[in-house]
Image (cartoon, rainbow over all chains, first blue to last red; front, side, top):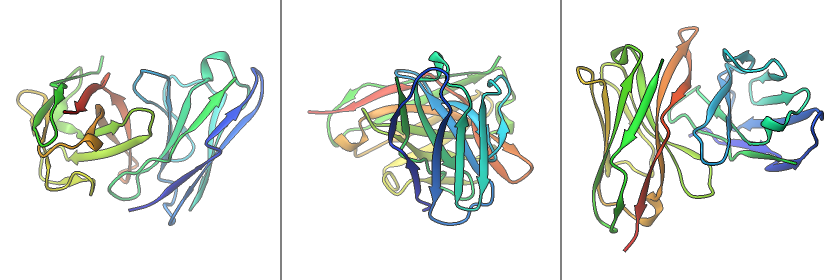
Length: 106
Length: 122
C-alpha cells in the first residue's frame, strides 16, 4: 500500500494568514492526489482533485500543487469557515489511502 | 441533487455481524464505482472497500479482508457492506462515497453520505 505522510499534523493560524499543508507519498503517484476538508461531525468534502484541479463550488483561495511524491495544499487567505481538518488521498493504486490529517486551528 | 444515505449502524457485541446499506439518488448509480470509508473516533479516514460500477471488481483493506463483503444492487440504487467477526477496532463512523473518474485514469470521492456509527462493544 502507498503510505501518505501529511505535515504538520496540526497548526495554529489567524484569519487572513496564508496556510500551507504538505503531503508526501511513499512512491511516485504522478498527480493522482486529492485533498479533502472535514469539519467536526461532518463528512469530508472534496476540495482539490488530481493535485491542482479545484472542485466545483470550492473557493479560489484553495490551491493545490505538486507531482511525483510531494504535494501541497495552500489556503491563500484563511477564512473563519476554513478551520477544519484537511486530508490528502492518493488515487494512484488501490487501496486509495489517506494521509493522517492536518488540523487547522485558530 | 446527489444524495447518499447510510443506514444499519448499531451497537453490536464483539464477534457479531452487521449489515450497512447506502441508498443513492440524484445520479445514475450504475455508472459509478462506490466505496465505504470509515473513521474511528478521533482518528483519520480509512478506505474499507470499493466496488466498480458493474460489481465486477472489488477491493478490501487488509484490516477487513475475509470479514467484510461489499455488494451493490444497481436496480435498487443500493450499496451494502456485510460486516462479520466484528472487533472493537471496527468501531467507527462508516461513510459511503461516490467515486468519479477524471481524465480516464485518476479518481476522487466527490459525494459522501452523512455517515453511520457502528459501535462494537460488550
